[in-house]
Length: 478
Image (cartoon, rainbow, N blue to C red):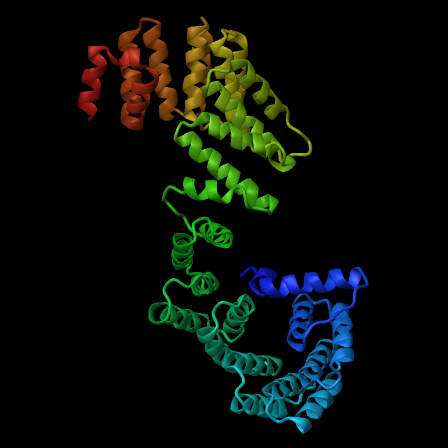
């Protein structure tokens, strides 16, 4: 779960720090009360600026040399500086004067944990609780003590209490998830958080985020997606939920329409690989919805990622063909086929498709030889793609090369006499050569070998399929 200082910094404290720093820069006399100094020092600790925290502490102690609260803050800084013995000494100096500060026991507990005096640390945290320390602070300390001992199950139990009491601290949520994983209690932790949601606060974003991450860790991706969807229902377009949902979707075969989701996700994705994936998915969906201009925009963005440039050029060529921008289509397709050395090469099937669409573009502007030549290259690269076979033979027939078409099909049939698409086109050739009885026999062989060729014939040979004898042949086979 992503953390941010915004989750911790208080606006009043930030304004106080700004006023303090302005006075320091202008060499004005600096005067704040003890509580204000404590807030300033705590802000510096939160942003891990120990140097400024120490300077502020020194100024504060010059003004208030007997303030015990400042001595406790000095002990906290010693913890951050890993001066654990010094921290304990300072805390004991405070308790010798005033025994009512529960912070004394928290500081000593953390110091003992880092000194690997785990039993002493546990005792100090118990004393802190007895003296009025916040339940969250105590159990955070206990959890860290257990973690240091690699007692992850016990740490998880302490963090359960923290999560129930203070779910809005991102660091706590992350530690809870970490301990659930290390203790191998992910499923149990997910059940616990689910119960917190139902019993305590069904609208708590952090709870839902923790639940989503735990389900993802359990590889229950559908449940993780559902949890992220709850986050998005509460806070539409919440960035972390969008990204986490995307990661989960990569693990399952999701059949729903995700276009709105990808449109919300695309502007915020930072990782190059993920942005490429989102753009590809959006482009494909826009194509399916026949929103070609939007698809074109996605593929143009892909041009900025060298690794996918060739594929983007191919898709741009296809789209411009569909939009009847033939000159542009030819330009993109030629670039895709030629290939950019810095980009991933087109695989054989995609390159074959590029030749097919290039042939189609050439045919639109009556570049007959180029259309035939490119369709032949397509079928040579992907001989099992029957669409290329049908199109190539029809180009040959349309442009007056029917004998060449016949020779080509006969060559294919010499290698496989039961190749239904070749049988179908052989029938078409005989039909166009006015040998209709011969044609019928080949159509019959094709239809009986593979009934799908009937649908192919309806699509590619619609003029022939209107023949009553062919209609009767189809009826007899159906």
